[in-house]
Length: 291
Image (cartoon, rainbow, N blue to C red; front, top):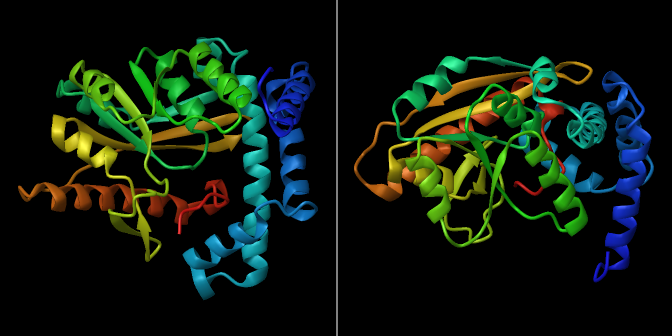
């Protein structure tokens, strides 16, 4: 761990200790320590609590009373604490085991998009278990690669990418060049992206829960440039370490004006995510900067 800051060293040690704690646990129990940690982070340490509550208030306003917003935020922390433990445990699963832990519903939308022969831009948001969704597809033979950013802690980054590789997922690191992304799509593969991240350049605005948000145009731009179909997906829990993934085609009628079409398709993707988050908001990562 040479060259790591003290904070990164401490985080790496905590990650290693958590991995050792989880190793002997049955899979249906691995989320429990994480849920307890999530409760502590919200109720005791109050990590990013103010940001989380503000995001929920901006999204739901007076429709959700203050007490209900706090309960939602607490449930969100507990869910993602448990999810972190599930992702850590995913590396020990063989493809056949992964396939038993996630059901795939609506695969016809993905199959139809792949049959078009121009690749698939598969989009989701920080909702549910994105990692297991990709692993479930890879376990069933789908050619999937994720477009991934680098975690701030290099140890955590290496651990997460090791989980992805063990699950059969390819990865494309974020960077200034889109050549690798275009190559994947032109080869008829599935490119997975999270499309609800704050776009620092603030040049591309759409609406999310009625609020203007800065959105990266990448997913829509890639699809329009290559002719790849867009499929929105999400994976929500249906039991302890059991998920059901859903796939839905996202379409927009092109106007012929690139900027307008990118904006319209980006908005359609955002609308699909918002509809799902409204249905089950506890599985959305309210802690990150979106508004």
